[in-house]
Length: 281
Ligand SMILES: Nc1nc2c(ncn2[C@@H]2O[C@H](COP(=O)(O)OP(=O)(O)O)[C@@H](O)[C@H]2O)c(=O)[nH]1
Ligand SMILES: [Mg+2]
Image (tube, rainbow, N blue to C red):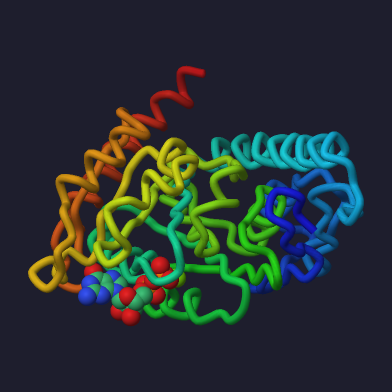
């Protein structure tokens, strides 16, 4: 169970794709996850067992710090694997239903022929979203978190062993729908993208500040619905920038395709910027 939110993490299941040949050198490169766990079993142990009822506040803080520092160590490992394979990784977060998967499908189409794309999908149950992505022709792997309400870096490391994206790809990680816990868990991504749809209200950046403070880009989705709503785009952007003055924003619609080309261009530009930063480091 996660002390950040109280969610369970014992039931994580990661889809298994291609069977790895043990002689496959590439596979060994992916399988550098440091916990001795094979890719066909997934003993997910991101933190020590938590005995929450009756635990003191001091002990809970220590447990939380322990979980996050273990996560950060896995995130560092992910980052070096991403760098070795020249992957540009985006962590896509929102509440359920904001349009993450719909936007990814449109963005994959927009990037077609320009940048190879792979996707890690996170949901509590079902492989529906991975199936939607695979229907575009892009490779995808589904992580089901069971009772867990967020992805962590350890799960992503294991999903990579199955997915093994083409070097130089953009790798999207669609997080479990939740604006709270995913904010605390670094997955090793280069950029964090928060999706907010116009049906959710202008005040969400103020109500869930950690997520907006930690994001690089906000996609304001479902712009096609604006004529039917009294949603104030200017107020929403002002709220988001009050939390994070460096936040970049794009207004988009997965339904009409508005703004998708601009998002694809943002990805291209940021992938190039990130590659230059990694080369310099
Ligand atoms: N009108 C409209 N509906 C959208 C848009 N994007 C997504 N949806 C709908 O919103 C619902 C949730 O979308 P989905 O992509 O599954 O959201 P996710 O849970 O964030 O991945 C679906 O019924 C989509 O068809 C959009 O831009 N405009
Ligand atoms: Mg989805």
